[in-house]
Structures are given as structure tokens and as C-alpha cells.
Image (cartoon, rainbow over all chains, first blue to last red; front, side, top):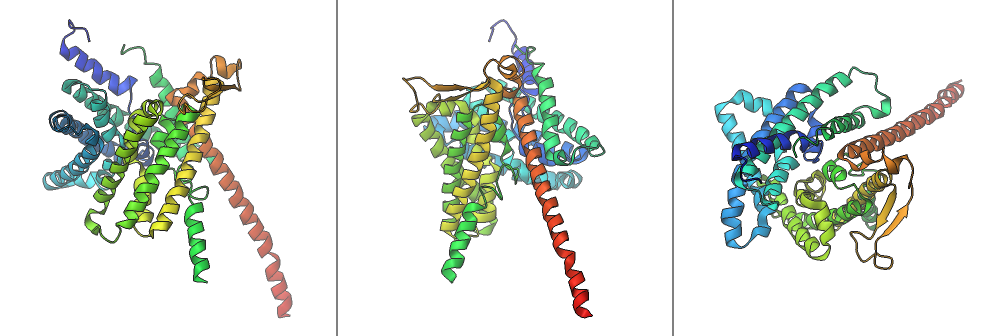
Length: 199
Length: 245
């Protein structure tokens, strides 16, 4: 990093980079299962996106200090995956309880998607990737925010496209998941085109 | 007699994961690694092997503990068992096959949240005997390795125009260097268009087309079976009428 560039600029650039050029779903392939599974209709897709964003940011907020201030001093950095998945599973439970208490309407909207977030690769992938590549705390949070925004945007766009695809005359063999994957491929080509901006 | 039933059950638990219930192509689970690490054949095959190891080990342990673990904490317990084996695999790969470790990257850790591994322990291992769970793990592992290797071969040939063996599994070599088999050299795939297949976009497109081909085959078989059932059913009422007279 260039010393003359203020931190806020690198922070914002990292967010944009993680959102678009390094998009979680289309370039890094995290969370394909929920991306394909929940993007049938617009509303659940949006709820899922918000829930994942929530947990991703909180998980990164907890995992980075846990790795650098607990696991490394204790001499057991190789336990990171086990610790992270426990943190994420309990965070998902906690978020569920808090939302249930303060906003039953939102809890109903999240419904069954909340427990599914535990097994969403995006959450673990970001936490693990941050500590694996030794990012600073600020840049880890930029990664988390950008990744969440990228997931939310892409799952929402995909749901919009798929709800229109339902009305189209797609060849029988391509109906459902195959055509969704090909659409995702075309969206991915569009994002590759943005590749030069970040650097 | 009961021996034969047990043998049939063993056979069923082993075979169903390979083709009939293939975890990737039929159940459509575990897509993230199937798209992310399949740029080359070797990385995909390595991923399949490690996946199989984790799945077999976690299936056996989950099945061993199936009467001990209380129902309320089943899922967290399974996740911790899987995470333990993933950590073991990570350390072993890092020590023995560092090229594989670096080419799989974070997706090795992401085996923890692989839907197939968790799915098999939730839907099979916690209800079945240890031996059956072992066979189920091996069968599903072979099925997944086959599927992911097919994607890897297609993407490497279309993306690079050749197939390389020995870059990751360094013990396979010819005069100390990896073996490269040129297949589509100097064709349109080699020069310009093929690049898309080693890009992330290619993963989606290859996977989508493969799934469509499988759906087409399944549809065709279903239609054929239906037609066969219809033509077999038609003469039956006639003979019945004849018999009634």
C-alpha cells in the first residue's frame, strides 16, 4: 500500500473491489447453494441476502480479534476453522433470538433461511480468507462489507431475472437450475469486464 | 436369507451415491467447490479425493456416536466432527501436497460447510450402521470425484487446449517435468475463445450445460418408459374383454 494514500481511500476501494470485481458469488463462487436455491422469487431472495450480509459482517467482526488475540497467542492457529464455524453457528442462533424478540415480523420474513446461513460458504469463506491472507482489521471489515453488498446485489438481480425466466419458453431440459447457471455465467462475464478498475 | 438382505443393503448404500443419487449431478449439492476449483483436471481430482476422505471419516464417526449424541445438539456436534477432519486434511495436504493446498486455497476449509458432507451425516450416517455409513461415504465420494473430474477435464481442455498431469501430483512425471497432452492446440479454443472456460464464467456455463444434458437424458428415459408402459398396458384390457366373453 502507498503511504500517501489515506486509509479511507484504500478502505473504500477495497469495498468496491470486493463488491464488484471480486464478487462473492460470480467470481469467487461462495454461497452458490443458497444463490441457486433461494433465487426463485424476489422477496425471499432479498431477505436471504440481508440475513447473510448481517451474519457475514458480525462473523468477521468477531473472528478477526479471536484469531489474532486468542488463537495466535495460545499457539493454536490451526484450530481456526473449528473455532470459526462454532462462532458462526452460535452467531446465527443469537441473531435469530434477537430478531425474534425485537422484530417478530422480520423473524417471520427470514423464517427458515436463518439456520441455512450457518452452511453458507460466504460467511466462513470471508472470515477464513481474511485471516489466511493476513489482512489488517480495517481491510477485513472492508472485505466483509463488500462481500455482503455483492451477495445482496447479485442474489437480488438473479431473482429478478429468474422470475421473468419463468414466463419464458425455455427448452425443457434447461428449465430451472441449468438456465439459472448459464444466466449466472453471462452475468459473470459482465463482471470480468470490470476487472481493470480496481488496480 | 437375512444375510442376503444385508448384502443387498450394503450394495445399495454403496452404489446409490455413484450414479443414481450422484451428489453433484442429481442431488445438485456441493456446487461451490465444483465450480471454484475445477479450472484444471488435477485440482478437481485432488479436491474429490480430499472430499472423499472427509466424508468417509465423518460418516463413520457420526455413525459410531449416533446413540450417544442427544438430538438437540446433533447438528453442532456433526459440524464439529467434520471441522476436525477438515483441519486434519488441511494439515496433511499442506505437508504432503503443497501444490494442491495452494491451488485449493480457502475451499479446503470450506469443506466444513459442504452441503453433501453435512447432508450425508444428517440423512444417512446418524440412522445407519457404521459399515453402511462407511460404504455410503465411499460411494458418494466416488460419485463426487467422478463428477468434479468430468467438469475439470472439460474446462481444462476447452480453456487451455491441453490436459496437464503431474503439476500437482508431483510423483507423476516424465523426465522430471509434468506431462502435457495437447488436444485442441492451435484451434479457436487455444487462441481466443477458450479463455472464457478457465474464467469463473466458464464454470457456470459448463455446469449449466452438463445439468441440461443430464436432464434431457432423464426426460428421454422417462418418456421411453412411459411409452413402453402404455404399449404394454394396451393389449391387456383387450384380452380381458375377450376372456370375459
